[in-house]
Image 1 (cartoon, one colour):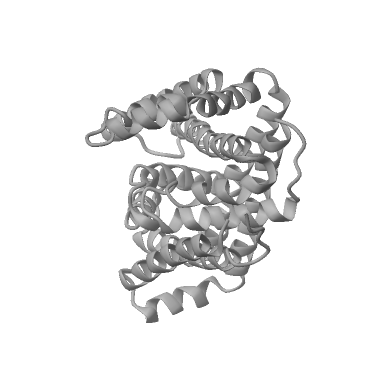
Image 2: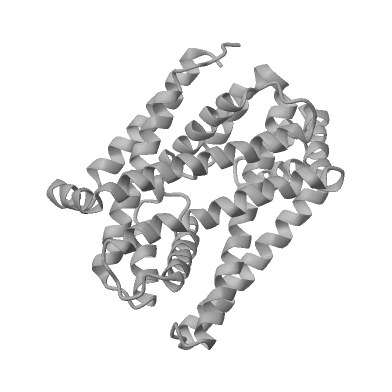
Length: 338
């Protein structure tokens, strides 16, 4: 990738961070107080995400290895993973930033077709694991209701049914995409959008062979290399489960009555329902507002105070800013120009 293009990605990320900081509805005094309250747990949270990004990089490397030799070092994939997620956090509609960046940076190593298919497969696996994660959370909530740990009224029951249908539909669509490919279908869907129909048709016609090869590589991972498929999925799903520790670390600061296994389960549910709500608002940069509202509602459903929900949302925002800044910094380091 040319340095000029890297600078464009960097500028977009920096502008988005600046917008997020100046629209953050918390005073700097309150922010500093919460950071001090988090103390060494904040260090643990920041370190946890270093591990989670490492697992994402392993998942991506497994996908790359499933289609042939992987000539890219793990550390370079780790760097691209952090930067890709940083750009996704910082830009509206998420995938408009990180995925194109990773494709362009990976192309000199494996070619544009393989780079595109691996990045698309990784994004699909990341989202697919989220749907499975949410389904497990819904089943867990229902189980805890029958055990008497959580409430269930008509509104909550309706929401769980709607979420179940949404997640089941997502899993079905992704499994179909893994079997038959996804890129050509997405281009044709874009063709139905106003003012984009002509462009999509011309793009498909001029790149038809390349698009079909990318779809073939996507379906090949699921149909012919199931070991790589399930290994990649396991890394992503376990990573989502480990992310619950971030919430658990913060709940420990409030010295709630139960610090045992059930509170760890609550942390898992808070994360799951908050991430579901926030991802429904994917068009906001850094999921501005959606994450905070999700934490407020999910902690309240667990019988916790608004103070806890607000504290968790603030510390998560600090963690996102920290790793987004690191990801943007890494744009300028260890690059291969093409």
